[in-house]
Length: 338
Image 1 (cartoon, rainbow, N blue to C red):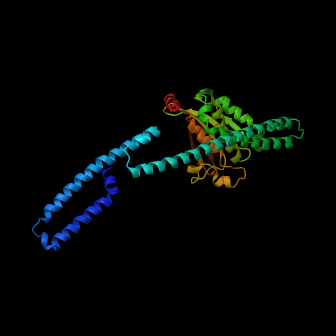
Image 2: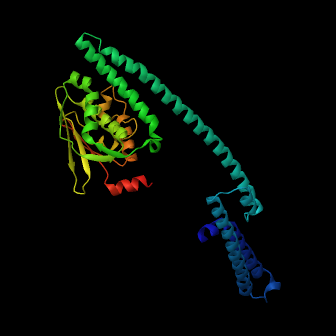
Image 3: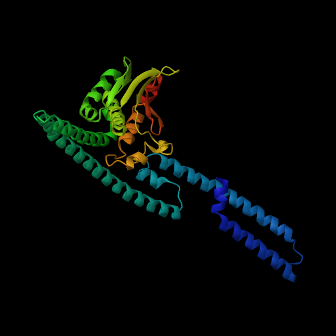
């Protein structure tokens, strides 16, 4: 604070030094001032200036602390009028208040517009889901099995995109739509595998699933979304007639780990640190028109919100291993206490 004060008052200090230099020059050149001690005058002026500088430091630093203390709290008109500010400071403060008022008005308008857009988008997603459901029912009446399988696969991809958009819209308010309960992993995983049955049949993808008898405390709906994104990536990037392995284990700290391992093209080492970034498709994604770069980004964000940690290990042309680590009980307490 002292250095800041001296820097702010650099003009004062420079002017004082200038006056001292002028006085010393006058004492040296003016014969009428020969009998007066120049050092006595210099020391007297210096002491007076130091007393003045200390006084201004105490007063102005006190004003600054009062000002910052009021700004940190709720600063209303009554408080702003009672602040110990100089005329120039009051002018600055008034201007700052006007700027903040304008910015807050613009920010509130932007929030309202964003909320309206989010509501409209959410309504649109729900409207789209209705015809998608109807189309899914109509697919059962197609007798050509090959054609039906292809249509079911394309329907599934469209359904996943709409579902992804729905959860992206809800992500901002996940705290309001979060319900922790005891969830059996088997139920969630098998439901998601069944939902992607058409796609798996088309590519000949099989699943080797462990018993999955473990239960975890989490939000079932959001966990299903995370598993859905990882499974869809595993199916998308796995070669035909390959298998996806799903199994669990317990780490040394007692936390449950859910592993999903595919035999796909894998993720390059340079891409691994960025796969959870928004819209990042990576090397493999650039070779596929189906990749949006949003699935893992949303899954990672949802996982952070509900306390799940996602880790990835991958080797090019050998596949990827995604691991979901569910928090311990004391970690859930910290999560819910935020």
